[in-house]
Length: 629
Ligand code: ZN
Ligand code: ZN
Image 1 (cartoon, rainbow, N blue to C red):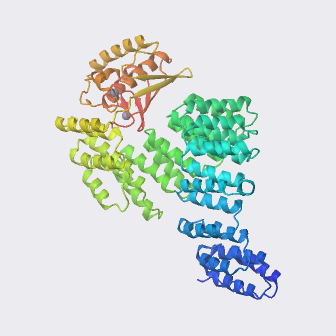
Image 2 (cartoon, rainbow, N blue to C red; image 1 turned 60 degrees about the horizontal axis):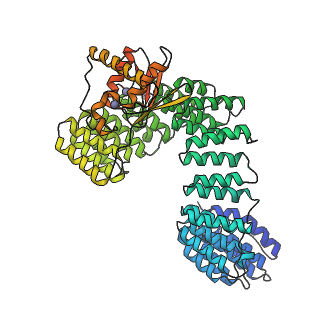
Image 3 (cartoon, rainbow, N blue to C red; image 1 turned 60 degrees about the vertical axis):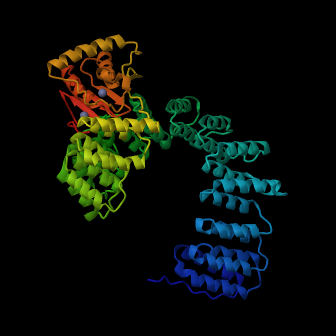
């Protein structure tokens, strides 16, 4: 259906002004109003010439991409175009990378360029992936006589800073910083200060960003929060937390929902559980509790720390659970090895009347995968498209492949991969590889590993998993081959570490680590446990010769992997019967998995291990993952 434009009869300038006002929103939304805009342009020709009117018409004609050619020819019909006429069109053209060249041609043709023109063209280049050209233009501006006074101000400087940021060029950024400081450009402008700090942080100079922050004349909650976030983004978690505490103590500003959400996300990432709890306590006191992103960050934090009880408590206390909270709840149960609960909450969610989105289904499908519910998983997979009209994403496919390959249904998995219309992602191949490891499927493991080598050639996990699969079926020449490739490419395994929080302190262990003050007690306990485990029929599984994780020389030392040291310390350092929670930066090894199952029984402790992949809840000799992970 074609939109009907209003009809205008125009005999005076003020009628034309009114007509432009009416047509502007219509044309912006729908190119069908272009003929009406053209008729206004021809009506103007009958009126006395006015640059103001011409510029308004130009503005109208540049408001839709389809009318840009009209705008260009209209500009050449204006008898005395001023900088504003050019600027209007340059700004419109620079919205799309396709029109960058005509925008530049217009810019070069302008008789007088002001700071709007410079700022528009500099940002256009930086936005459309040519930040170095943008910086070169800014330098040209500084050199052109007369510009220093007229155009070199906070607008053009901010555009240039954005270009330095986009180019990740700290040198250019620092030059700009010196330049604006020397000339006092934007000295009282909060936007300029935060642009400077962002530039340093994005260029990997978070300490310089901090210096800018420290020098800010006025710091509000937004600038504090941004600085805390810059530390987290730069993986300087400790500094981020310290600055957050400074903010509480001396900042003179109160954190808002964004601040709390950022800090909680970092707590989740670093599994800093007790800090997360303190943040939660503070949030409740400061009545920030009902900001919904802070609440979902809280759910996410508790679920990442393996504390589903707190997740449920927070969730049940929500005034209104939104999609993000439901998703956090369902994915939390899936990752924490309680897929039945995840599916129960999914049913509840469906009854709430909110329409599920594609992210929610990732949680549901991964619950099915963790529970080994093949039929249910496939049913949900089909539901996504047939019932909800949502296109399958690469993550959905990855979950289903995970489900099929964990249960050893490799034919179906392969068939699905071959029929996929979108490109499989790395999670899909990694899931397939993981399944091949469980079921010792060498043939498909090769295919998955090759695909992964292409996507992320530097990831040691792929090489190590492939080598382990080869080792498990006795193909030792192939193991050697993988080892050689790793060596020739200089790929090294990341050292494994496990950590545990006791008494508000985090204790970190490496393999065979003897640096802990209570190392002696730990090794004595491990020895005792080992003897009891042998009585229960435990035999160390040396099939994991090429351990994911550990230092090769110490491979014989399988009994002293970092996770076991952390578990033993947990038993010594926590009250009898208390649950022990361990975090590991890499995947738990198969032998430690069997050992910890037995330890949970012998020591009568619930042991929770969050590895890089998922949670394992060990209790009475078995694990929530049912030995598939
Ligand atoms: Zn191990
Ligand atoms: Zn497990």
